[in-house]
Image 1 (cartoon, rainbow, N blue to C red):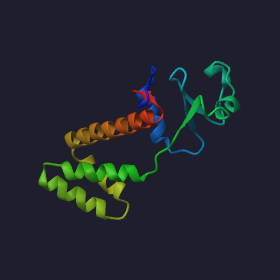
Image 2 (cartoon, rainbow, N blue to C red):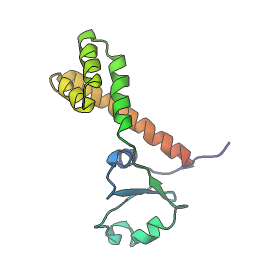
Image 3 (cartoon, rainbow, N blue to C red):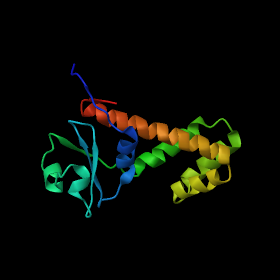
Length: 144
């Protein structure tokens, strides 16, 4: 069994990185201090202790690339959320939305009319993202 490093990681930033999905944005986690680093075309080394993007991207032992999750996980979260709905009518509406073309848009459309259910969905979704972030950190040997 390996010991996990205890670093002051900003879990919210790791969640944002996992959800970014933009090829122009590359997120890294500094395995020495827990800092998240965003490398873009406008990367400014002064914002990150004068570390160049080449230094960050060229040292994978220290700077761990945070992977962008593909869109399939959003749809999976929608399916799991729908399966847990206690409101039968809402559950049926969401099931129909998920079977339609552009299911994510349809799902959001159904939820848009129900503020309380929408809050529940956002809370559910945030919990799922945090679980993914913690799982990724654990794979890196870092305790969240």
